[in-house]
Amino acid sequence: MTGLNAHADALALGITYTSPLSVLGGQAAFSLITAPGNAGIGIDATLTGPRGNAISGVATDTRTTLSDVIYQGTLKWNQGVHNQMVYVTGNIPSGTYDPNRLANLNLGFVAWDAGAGYTYLDPKTGHEFSVVGGFSYSLPNPHLQYQNGIDFHVDWAASQFVTKNVHIGVAGYLYQQITDDSGPGAKLGGFRGRAIGLGPQIGFIIPLAEGYQGYLNLKGYKDLEVENRASTWSTWVTFAVSAAPPEPPSKPALRK
Image 1 (cartoon, rainbow, N blue to C red):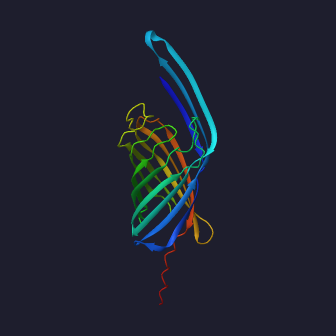
Image 2 (image 1 turned 120 degrees about the vertical axis):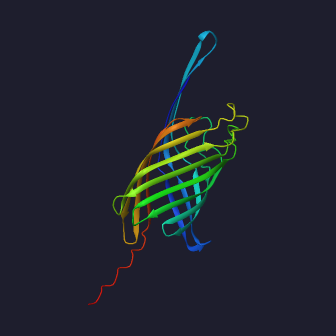
Image 3 (image 1 turned 60 degrees about the vertical axis):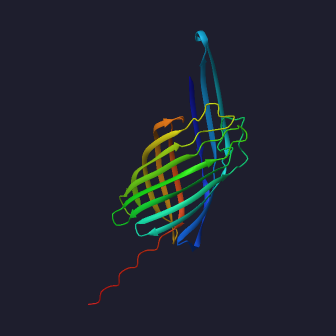
């Protein structure tokens, strides 16, 4: 019998450059993100052997550390209420991974993720729906001689603008590993993971200085189904600053 209790609190800090030039008819952007934070984990295990003999043990670890550096390139297109996007992202190890510690905020290996997304947004009705799907591929963890299998993931959200600057709705995700874990360290075999999560969200568009606006989003997920993964709940708070869209031109007054 094994009990696992873990938490992680991190502040992701990032910057995005958006190209003023059209690329393949779309808008290209590049982002860099890293996250300092605190992670803690506790394991309470009991091993029962022949004749009912049992051995118990407890291990805990907490540390404040730095995540890997995440880079992401995106290319987006807009046709009225329809918006499409493709992306490629990966990580640059920060060097703070410790294979002798239970608590880490970084991966300990290099991984890449690529996919595409779609957003429907109708300013007249206030309806919004977004979905992003992709595949992740990881190199082996050289410290543990363990390689994660390829996974497929989908994130989605649907919301309604209740005012010009506020929307509420639901968000969810699906994670499904599609190939086995491998390597000498994969003692449990393929160990394919699966998780489905769902929760509420609310967003606020905040006018800032002339020509700029902020966007604050709060959402939470609760795992409804898991396989070979810890059952979790998580809360995400996101704040981004960007150029405000131009105001529609005002109609000229009619002369009598």
